[in-house]
Length: 182
Image (cartoon, rainbow, N blue to C red):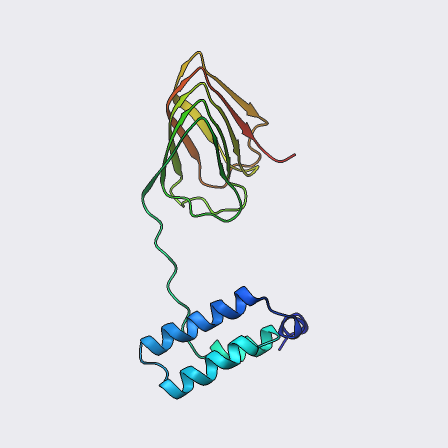
């Protein structure tokens, strides 16, 4: 055990983390990996666990649950309001963003982009859009129709190495700003 993993094992867990461990135990029992007696004992221990070390001892021998599948395409639509996606969110290969008299803030800096890149199709009318992207991400607006619309790309990508973002669709009286760190 390394020093950092030993320190983590002594850190306190939250009620949500206890519930996540209990759900993992329930799933394993449902798959026939645990007996009913072992299920009861582990669930009770999970809800009384104080540290990560306590929880890890209960789930280390169980498989991780499968990650949820990311759909190919997702539609985000809003009228007269605000749309926001930040943090770790699942990004499909294609986003359809439909805005009317609205604002949108889409942050791609911490969530992983699809390996083949991302297409964002816009149908925006009198709206304001901000795309926060990593410094190494190319954003192409060549296929975006501008009808009294405007695209502002703040800063150019440095050392493009990540997947590209391709913007398509139409901006009608709307402004789209691409923001990069630094």
